[in-house]
Image (tube, one colour):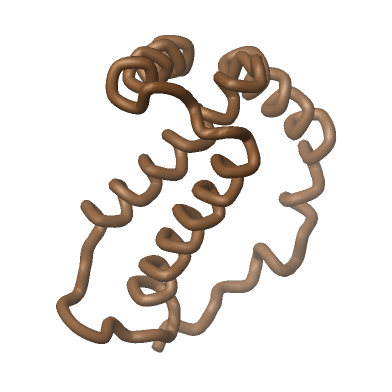
Length: 115
């Protein structure tokens, strides 16, 4: 599925099941919530915190990332942002701006110690 197709499918889903889009500020708050859930999971999977109960895995992480993408797509749809065009322009901008930056970053050459 392309980004454009995904945007259309999200729009159809919102109209069928969600009645309408939440307002932009509500969607911003929902996005922060979803990013927080992703962060909580990642810090337990890859960081120094441990799970309190049953461990979760990459399937759960994938679901949390999909939740983030869903809300970002809702915000894009309701504000008239074409994600395909925008992401293409953004990647071009990053390629022009950062084409040497990361290769010359000594911090990226260091490998973190594995516990």
